Length: 175
Image (cartoon, rainbow, N blue to C red; front, side, top):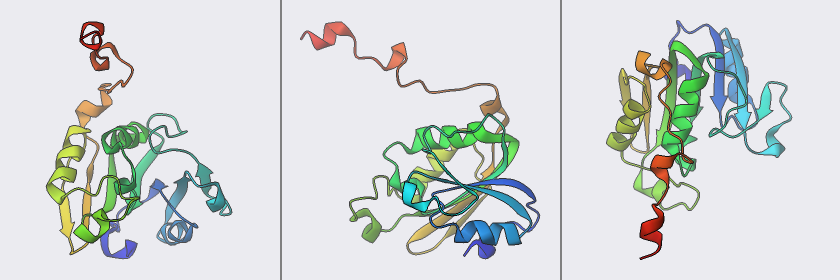
């Protein structure tokens, strides 16, 4: 599946979120990339290129990766915007991404698909998180989005869940 979408020009470090058993990491390495897999499941740590971590708090420095990739992972997060902001943070300026996302009604019925949105919602989330959406691949149960980190994302836009703007005013709590 990766070979259908992954640009042949990509060479460099790539972060694969939700990488499973590491099979796709081997495919990425065979394509000339330097893959690192990120998983939240300790049972998937058998592959040497997989690290434990949460896509909402990625354990890498800003601008570590040239590319970010995921296949049917983002729809499993209850906070996709926050995950996308983290993915933007670890990408180098003008870094590129490829995300394959489940969008079908059948997938929405599965309890572990928290964010199985229609394709237009995903496009909006990517744009708001600081990415361009340069190409969209549509299939019956999945879309593929490909694009770049936008310049304004580098200037430090962040969304702070604990910030003053996200607190309920005490006066409302007393009503």
